[in-house]
Length: 448
Ligand SMILES: Cc1ncc(COP(=O)(O)O)c(C=O)c1O
Image (cartoon, rainbow, N blue to C red):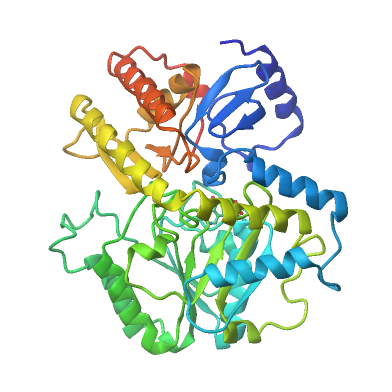
């Protein structure tokens, strides 16, 4: 594999760009991308199991999305909707509110990223309830603007030296059934992971002061952690009677990623607010908060407005994105492809002791690498070496939570590419098990 141009780019990048904006895995400079194939500056093709971090649900540069962007750019690139109106905004506002599974009248507010949408949702729940406190969870990732970063319950030092964070935010335990600290099994446990919250609500955290609870229905960056259904049910029972707004962060789980339209569809739960980002604009910067109309009534004029927000070109891409997901049956395809991928990975688990767990729904799968299956100690070295060697074999494979391989390709990835990806993974696993991947790669592969 040639790497000269990519290496040159990385050098330039290191000179001008800050580490705070990335956690690199390997020196891949992307020049073009189509469907599930990415081509680098040196002309090498890669199968993309990352999908630009669960963004490209419809695949890279889907022709319908490209056409919509071009057509809209020809007629209007931007006019600020802080003061005026345009059709692409009105049209997409209708589509995304109708798609969101909340009964009755709904409203939407748009932004650019999952982070700013999370901040918007914090403003909404506070202004609606006239309460200040927020409940969030350990292991969650909500983004890096101040509000979102405050809610985030993961990351090594992300909050260091930049405090104070937002006041009034309390983090509680999120279920981690593979590494249950209580040694319980989800089928039989009595939800000891909720005890601290139950106790808090009885003692030091007056539920009447809590505006909202924010959660990822399935925690992504924590390594694909899915709570038991009964945990979600009990959480609602605990919070609902006090008028606490239930906010689901669907930035990573939304729009078919987990084999259902929304991550929260895996549970019997009725959220009040949905946060969207990542895949919403098919790669164009777009986020949204959608929820019951009355929740939007407390936030005053320009309380969450952006001059370049609600951009018509972005809206045109988003319209086409939703149409493609529906017309190409991508939610169902995600479920079916995901089942196949998981089944094949479970076969590999039989061969490799360092694979502790394979979990996930649809095309959002985590392969949890361990030192040994007894202690389940995370094996970060394995994740780094395997990701790096996979890149050398022209597969974009990354990890999160330090040791969980991340499989989130476009939802329309071809079966033949899935098979090729699996074959590369198998070869890579074998080389790792024979200690054939040098320690030097640990200096390059940082990841997160
Ligand atoms: C669940 C979740 N919420 C929010 C965010 C933040 O989104 P963004 O990076 O677009 O600000 C992310 C990004 O990874 C995410 O995975």
